Image 1 (cartoon, helix red, strand yellow):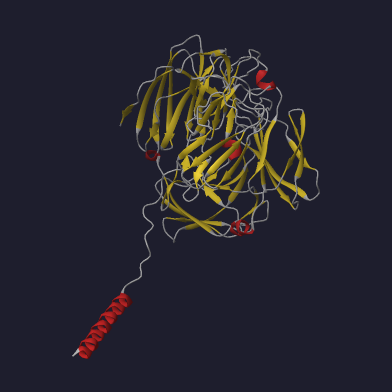
Image 2 (cartoon, rainbow, N blue to C red):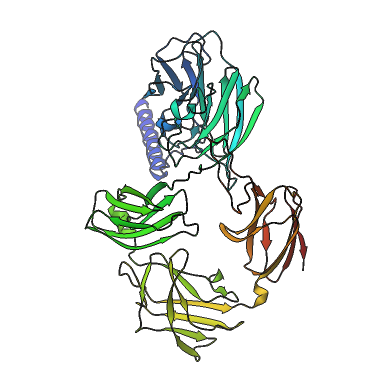
Length: 560
C-alpha cells in the first residue's frame, strides 16, 4: 500500500513538472519596457562650500548632481563675474563637478559663478538652465541687481550671446583697457540680468566680443551703451539697449568666409568701390566676382587646388589688405552628397502645378553659381496651351548693373491668361566651373492684373523738426523707400506681389536720407528705427488702405 502511494506521488509530480515546462515553453519572451522618456535635467544635490558662503577661502567648489552629466561648451558657458585675471579650471568625477578657482580673487567681493546651459544629463541631454553659485570673500553677499534687454538697432531682433558689462571707472576708454567689474551674457531673447551687485556708479557697455578678450578692440565688434553713468542702488532698474556696428571713416574688412570652398564672401563695414582682388598662388584661379545689393559684401568664386590656407590681396577704397582663407574640411560622405550640377531657380510665383508669371515680368532664371555661357546651338521650346502649338525661343544672358550677378531671361512675349510650358534641353547653360544643366521643364500661366494687389499708403508726418525716411520691405528685401515731408504723404502702390510687407521709419537726425550707425567715442547713438505696429498683408485682386503716423500708428483699413 505504501509502495503504491509513492508511485502515485511520483506520477502526479511528473505531470505537474511537464505542465510547467509546457506553459513556460509556450510563453512569449517580452523585453522589459524602459518607461517614460526622461525629460528632467540633473538636480543639484549639494555644494561644498555651500552656496552663498561668506568669508570664502576655498580653492575649489564641488557640486554634486543627481545623475551622470556632460558639459556642453564649458569655455563659453561657465564664467566667473567679476572677471578674474587667471582662468577657471574644471573637471568631472562621476556625478561631481569640481571648479578650481584662481588665486587672484579680490577681497570683500561678491562673486557669481554662472553655468549657463553647460550642464546636461548624459542620456537625453536635458539641460540644467541658468544655474549659478554665489560666494563672497567678505562678510556680506551683495544683493543689488540690474536687468534689461538688447536688440539690434536696425532689425529690432534680440541679440544673443553679447557681453553686458559694468565698470566702476568713469574713464571712457576703460572698455578698451581692462576687463569689467561685473558682466553677464544675453540669452536667446536678448535679456540679461546682473545680480549680486555692490552699490555704486557704473558704466554700462555691451559687446559682441569677437576675439573673446572682454575688450572693445576690434572694428567688427558690435556694441551698445548707455550715454551716462548709471546708479546701482536697488533691484528694479531695467535698461533697453540697441546694438550696432560702429561707423568709421576708414573702410575695414570685417570677415572673410566660405561654406563650400568655392564661393568666398568678403564683408566690409562700408560700401566698397573700386574693388579688385588677386591671389598669391598660381594654384588658385578667380573665376567670377559680384557684390550684394548694398555693396558692402563682395562674393568671389574660385577654383583652387590648395589644401592649406589661400591668401588674397584686396584693393578697395584706396585701402590694401591681405587675408588668408583656410579651406573648410568636407568629409568624403559630404563630398559624395554634393552635386557638381548648378541648380536653377525661377521668378515664378506660387507652388508646384500652380505657378504664375506676374504682369510686366519676363521669365527669368537665376543660378547657384555664376553663369558663364548660353549655347547658341541649342534652343529652348515654348509650348502654348497644347503640344500642337510650340515655338523655339532664345535665352539671353544679363548682368545686373549694380550687383554684377548673372542671370538669364527668355526672349518671348508671354500673353495674359494663357498656359505655357517651357522645355529647356540639357547643356543649354554652363557655369564658370564647366557644369552644364540637365533637361528641365516649367509649367505656368501668365497672370493678369487681378493676380496682384494694390496699396494706398498715407503717412502723416507730424514732427516738423525731425526728418523721417519711410522704408517698405517685402520679406527681407527693401521694396520702396521715401523721404517724408511734414504733413500728409500719399503713396499709391500698384500691382504688388501678394505676401507680407513691413513698414518702418528712420528718425533721420542728420537729414542725409539714410540710416546712420553710432559711435561710442563720440557718444553718438545709432539713429532710431520705428516699426509700424502690424504686418501689411497684400492679397490678390485686393485694394488695401493704410494710414500711419510717425510715432503713433493706427490699424489698417481694408477696402474691396
